[in-house]
Image 1 (tube, rainbow, N blue to C red):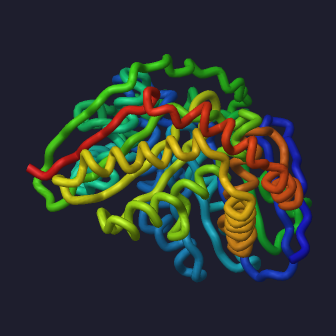
Image 2 (cartoon, helix red, strand yellow):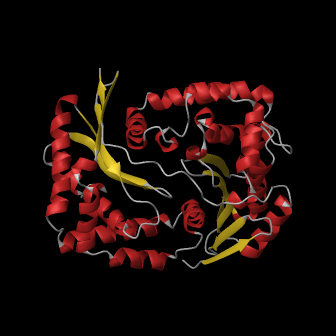
Image 3 (cartoon, rainbow, N blue to C red):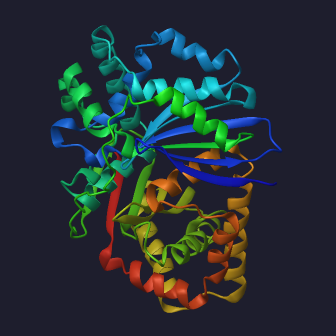
Length: 411
């Protein structure tokens, strides 16, 4: 599959990155705003996510139902999501509808009107979404984990916020937050598919004009302070116990992040991983177990999630810790390393067959690194990971004295 990456910084400060893939007939468009839940004060908890909802309620150019229909009428798709460090609005469609996709997504970011009549109604919607997450134990347990790991820092709060804060939001609060954070210097537009970079630049220049203040994207954020490991136990009416054992990990710029990714694959990345083979297959303790890593701009975390019968919780934690100790004490085998590398490289290449994945990849790269990493560069980085690298990262991160344990138990 042939492709070409290009980048342009517009006079106002917006960064525009494209990946041209002439062999496909689709395009994926993303508008990224470098602001997330970690940038909110306690009284603003959930503001980014709430704005993500409210922009779909109308702009100065379109009413709510027109926004909903605009991409669907041409067989396309429109959506958005909020994370701890950024917000993304995106669309995908046939290449012939690129102007419509760019126009629709940029309209949401630049021209929302936050109609008063929709404000209270959408608060009810978001509160119901909160209840949905709280009723989904394998997601709710991660909120408990973040709180244990980051404490009172904004990284420890759920992206969705809390009901008291969301209920307090006024239209003016949204307008002021938007004006402060949705500036040109914080915006990245990423487009992947059958597109010409020069055409995307012209379309964006026409659509944006001088409607956004320049601002900047200094990336200055207060790093979360270190927290002492804790044990957290909560109960809910359910059938299964949901467990996490985890701690602080690496940030996106750490040189050992590639070795960590390979380590994560070996530990709990698939059915052939150590956790699956030794805890699910050998002991039959669970249906679902996996390890995870999250890399943020100045911090990160690593851990293991598992769902099991409550009577097996203590034994499960012991088995997980045993796998950590094995990785620390004994080097992995050459065959295990090569299998993990092949698995990681295969997953990466398969993901690149999807235009939305490519759009999100180049958008995140620009936000975090300010540059493009080609597929060959990434594959080469994976290939450089050694047995010694894996064991060194295990020594650095898998010491059980660093880890908090979270138990969400049935009552």
